[in-house]
Image 1: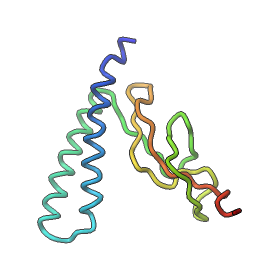
Image 2: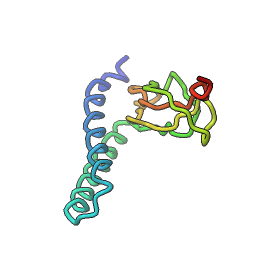
Image 3: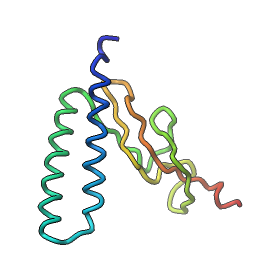
Length: 119
């Protein structure tokens, strides 16, 4: 159990990473110089945060395009898409993270469901 003693501290950092990512996503469509400067600054902070988390053995994992796995993902909703196989993650709301060999936060995702087409 001692090998996971810092887990709660690490989890508290993940919300900061999410907030920064949401800021980047909301400004991404803007083309003004101020928006560009803001994006650069936010990206630098986010990269620094990810480096520090990496040094603590915390790594994000990708979810889009892979089969939904309840050990890794929390399905927030389903959507129907002909571009993806049934049960595949088509969008990620929040990244999932692993600490060493353990999932400390499930990715929050949208899962493709062909069942929606049958209604």
